[in-house]
Image (cartoon, rainbow, N blue to C red; front, side, top):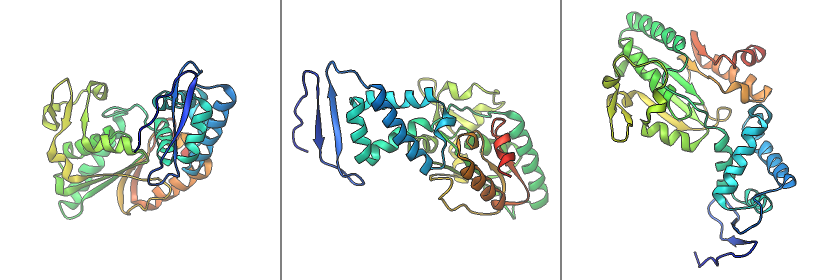
Length: 286
């Protein structure tokens, strides 16, 4: 790329060459100009709402404060004012993806909602006693975020007495950033603020700066991928599916489709886990 001239004064907007998936980007450096104004913010919100709807997400359900916080965060990150940023997201698919991702990484932790994992352990134990090693116990985690739920599932299955070859955990999330962290499987202390793990040292390796890494022995049974819940092809015959704290942020049509697909992907008598806030949405969707 050629030299980019430094903007001065009230701020200049510079067109720079595009990249794969983009027809060009708009790079901005601000001087004393305000970051945004209400008309531009409203226009960006409208654009984001359209993008979210394509993914089956209801922007209103996320809340205006969350949406505006994400937009302002991207304005700071890109050094754009509102008008220039609106131009940028019209051309730069990477930036629209980054904006959407900032809305899609909820706060989570290990063994969130312990009763769900108690039920999972019981089901896995019964499966192991009935099937032995002949048929793996299979779990799907939808909207897995940064992976705390995924690794909690794997630990719970191990606690139920299943060996790695007796279990399989698949996970899916729209956010590439979240999936990358889940695959890295390294977490700080805030991820452990739920119920204390009885044998944490058995499942995690201590690193520096208070971080912990999931024991590599668990990884062989886990697959984590990036994908849209509505478009990605799921496998079948799961014994349990986790779809927690995501349905409330979906459009009605997306909720209905997700519940229908999850039900079809379960074995007869399989378990579908939803969050407390999701339950009314799941019931309404059938």
